[in-house]
Length: 148
Image (cartoon, rainbow, N blue to C red; front, top):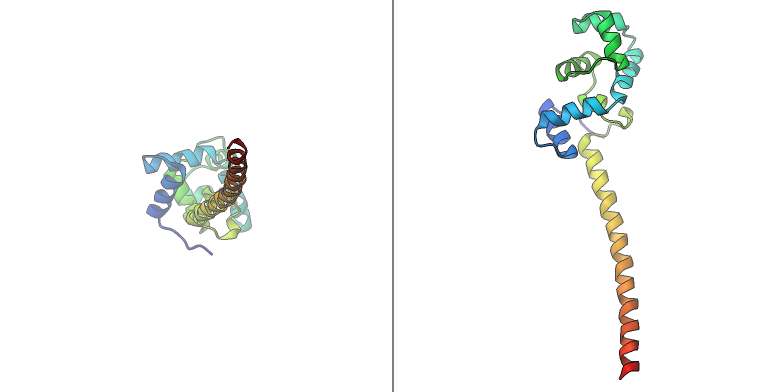
């Protein structure tokens, strides 16, 4: 089970995970490309019993602005995302990750899992290649004996 990360850790992990030079570029790219953020905001807000009007009030914006934000008609800016996470009492990771936030996995957990899967895949491929080398070596040795 993962632990909550600081803003700096989330930015660093997002930069590492998505290969951006500038950490803020990675955050903005995630916010623009991840349509599930608005769905998570909606889902968490509803589970916590917070109305759109109350959420808008807590963010210091109009009801209409929040509705547009939650529906994806308005681009979500980083400061607003931090504030929403704070109000909903969730980590930034929970809002940004495409994975189910109920799993408790952090970006680091997910990256570690991806690496482990890739390593296992490469090990299997390596075993297959070793077997092919043995077969080809036997065929080659047999061919050389026939030629002599």
